[in-house]
Image (cartoon, rainbow, N blue to C red):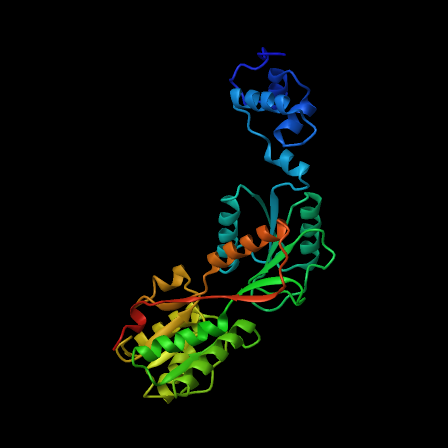
Length: 343
């Protein structure tokens, strides 16, 4: 039996060949011994393990994964890599995978179906073990296909196929939380300035607001005001509200951008916030809420937590766990700041 390996001096990373030479076995036998194959004699296995420890051998994760039929890699496919919604979801997923030593491949389809199909084929060619598909909005999307050889988790925008597993923020609950917070601060005359009604997020948040307003025995002072997801729309709608509704004391804005425009309009009109009118937004976009005057209360959609949850679901699916499919709504939270301080 060989007791030393003259070709290995410790100044480089040890290879399986070094382990085999030190143990006096073939590379194939060393591989079987280190991977727990039962074709290896116990004494030989012990000798190989001792040799591996002596040279500080670290198995190649990719090679080990291939032996198990896995590569230790996953794909993250997004429609909007620079978007303020998808990016924190991707960061949360990558953090979760990183804790388990799973490597991540990232691709941006930019909302283009041909580019999406190209990236999907590239992921499959790389033999990724699973895939997370992240949409740019919460509107339902077409499935990537039932015949894929790997599990897929849909995040933010749900799949239209009920057999797929989709994780989305609970926008209806977000609307309810917004109203409940304003009511607890003494507000009774509430208005809702929303974004584009064509978006499911706008309709879901409106549903939640209307539910909570009715539950509190109140009603909105105006019909829901739909428009663009912009500061300009927030300013325009707020000026109209102040002119028409003198008793107005709370404005719910369906995005932080709309809310910052609302705050600007109120300041220009000399309406004190929050002393006379409280203002609340959605998404808790740090670049907007922290620099608003005053700092903006917002409903946080927990995007990074959504990404981590999607990564956990995918890890479970790659391990063979079966999911019932369907859409799972994840909880959101309110972050209170000076724009809604108690009167």
